[in-house]
Image 1 (spheres, helix red, strand yellow):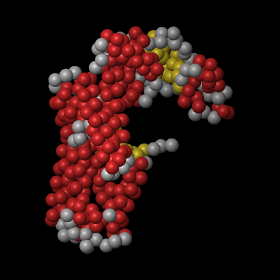
Image 2 (cartoon, rainbow, N blue to C red):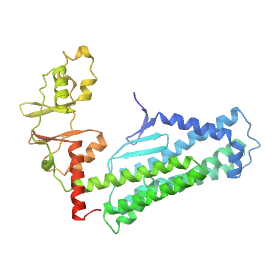
Image 3 (cartoon, one colour):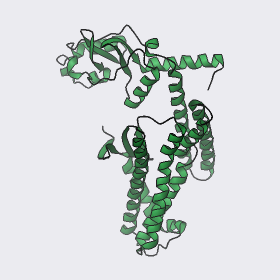
Image 4 (spheres, helix red, strand yellow):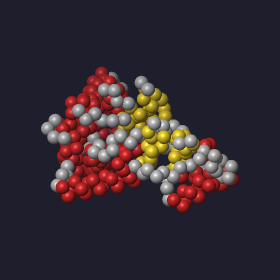
Length: 371
């Protein structure tokens, strides 16, 4: 089942809406419409001209949609700066908790990361100021409320995103500041540790005042942990070459083999993917998932060549293993063929990389070289 729909493209960047966005719009719309008078008091506007019922509900949902348009503009600001830096933007996705710009890479040079990170919050601040300004010049109570509250939310988003904790922009800015004096990995660990402290503080406050802060605390703690782990893994695997850990004796498939035969081989070997080879050349790869998508009646007639993935990402024996890990994460792929002069030399799986990382971490601890 598809969980996201593409609604368009801006400067070559696909814009996708996750199904959870509908939940968010519903919750925000209902919450605003049910608390118009309390919100009006909070932001300092007169709500007497806003009729209860349909008008309040329409206002609430308009603000919810306005919020996510603001989030999209925030993410576009990140993406446009990324494009200027030569970074490929895979997509922008809007979902329950906001938006994500899916970039091929994050710059490690501190000033570049600061520039890329700070532009989003500054864009939210600008939207907030402009919205407030428009609210001053309109006269209809509904429009005054709409622009004032949209401005308030965007200023809040500016402040929230500047919190020095991953995965917020403030966490990346903090890392970049640290990275001016220490290594990128150490800077990430320091920023992640501070983020975890922030998450714990959110959780404590949430227990006494607002349970929603517990959800934010969980989100921040997991984000900090994942960022730290990801960077440490890349740093560790940069020391290793593909040829050092690849599997050299690779079981392969012929393009003419039947799916039923391949399924039996999967079951016997407990492997999840095999390269398809003919005359020493790699033609594609077939995974267990490819086989499972077939109906039982097709197992005896469908050939490997009909279901194999032909658009392969391959690596050479001399490549850094960190490049393989990055490709696995970005493409959600569990294995890659290793090729030299067009011939299959081996295969590298996600399990190989994880085992290598864990072994090197243990070795670094023994040597006293922990990050």
